[in-house]
Amino acid sequence: MGLERADDAGVYKISDDLAIIQTVDFFTPIVDDPYWFGQIAAANALSDIYAMGGTPKTAMNLVAFPISEMDISVLRQILQGGLDKMREADVVLVGGHSVEDSELKYGLAATGFIHPERVLMKGNLKLGDRLILTKPLGTGIINTAIKGGLASAEITERVTRLMATLNRDAAEVMQAFPVHACTDITGFGLLGHLAEMTVDSGLGVRLLSRDVPILPETLNYASMGLLPAGAYKNREFRECMVDFSPSVDHLVQDALFDPQTSGGLLICIAPDRADALLEALEKKGIKQAAIIGDVVPEPRERIVVE
Image 1 (cartoon, rainbow, N blue to C red):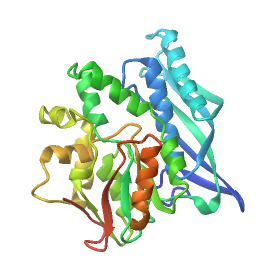
Image 2: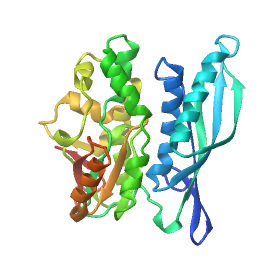
Image 3: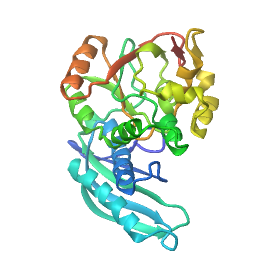
Image 4: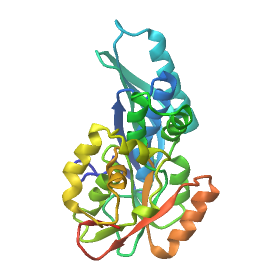
């Protein structure tokens, strides 16, 4: 599995019972604290392996650093944050590469293991499937408020810890269930990634906006115009596939297009197993997981938001 389909990672079959998953992700700082930036960047990079149903095993650091403009202690804190997150995930750091650059960037190239018959793809939707989201939305909007100095210390800490939280527990729970498809919600926002799942599926999706978990203060900040540039780009690119009910508030629409950093998993599972999966996620401590919609026959390859 590679460039022929827009999945979360590449998969290469080694033997009848082993395949490797490969992915890479890095970005510029989204929080001021370098240690937390390292944690978030590492969690975000590993997420694609969890979304494919696999277990991350090794990683390599990717660093761009303005050595003439920034103290080397900042880089040490970033790398320590990433290393601590990898240790939490039982991932071994095996190397990396750094370049001098005018803009700071950090992330990982990561490799995971999976049985070839257990690979989860985005586009394997089945009629009647329920959609379960494991983390609330709003990180893009709230990070914009943080940059503007408008977010409280409480919400800043909450969103920082949320972004640094691994999707490992959710991935481990779903491995015990007959999940049909999965992806993680990142830069394209919920609707953008859901659109990727819907394209060429021959099916449609009904999204219940009232059931989508959204971080506190997200809609308030959105009402102040604190939307990241990516939210506008996501809407421009994908709103042609989306039909909004007149009852869906425009601010909620903004949250559905909001680009996420290290967001949750979006899991598609048969309707008779959805409640059991949700209960298992809650028992694992994933308290804000929610059933947010289902797969429908019509309209084909469109998303209806109610």
